[in-house]
Length: 176
Ligand SMILES: Cc1cc2nc3c(=O)[nH]c(=O)nc-3n(C[C@H](O)[C@H](O)[C@H](O)COP(=O)(O)OP(=O)(O)OC[C@H]3O[C@@H](n4cnc5c(N)ncnc54)[C@H](O)[C@@H]3O)c2cc1C
Image (cartoon, rainbow, N blue to C red):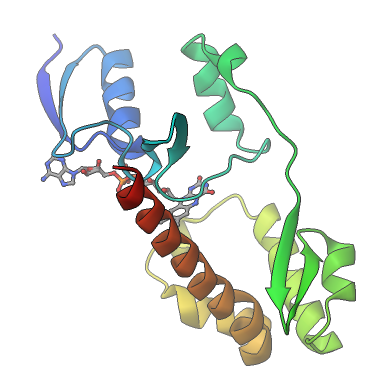
């Protein structure tokens, strides 16, 4: 017989856990400390427009997520928009997000580009991530792509994402 089970947090993980518990015949009770569900993916009202607190995108290769939308009967509510990516580096906006963009990228040596591309390609082919659960991420990325590509493409991207997040938070504060 199903049990009442407490789930702490109504972010994507908590909601997915609660959903799985329902599928398994239990009664989840979700506790959320915030005033809304969604966790980091929750939205806020930006002058009539609902935007997420931190910038987010979904990949069409995220089959589990798409399957869940189908199961919940809300797949048709998703409005897919094709996005383009750019990367601001050395004072210019460079195209980003595909192998050609990596090859053309200005400010990175050929070996670094090759190592970065190889790592990205092999990562997309990896099905078993369990062996990486206890591996420290920064060291792992650096071993694959090398210091140069790490500094330019991983560390800077992470810092830029942080800046964008701060900008989003400021926009959120300004809107509320
Ligand atoms: C800048 C940024 C960009 C990102 N971009 C993407 C992207 O493009 N695509 C993507 O797939 N992912 C992206 N992510 C990752 C994604 O946001 C997280 O993987 C996801 O939100 C994690 O979900 P979670 O439920 O584990 O945690 P969270 O989203 O953090 O949710 C945790 C929830 O638990 C609540 N909580 C915490 N403690 C308690 C408590 N004691 N009691 C009750 N409630 C509690 C919190 O209030 C929160 O609502 C991004 C993350 C960041 C920061």
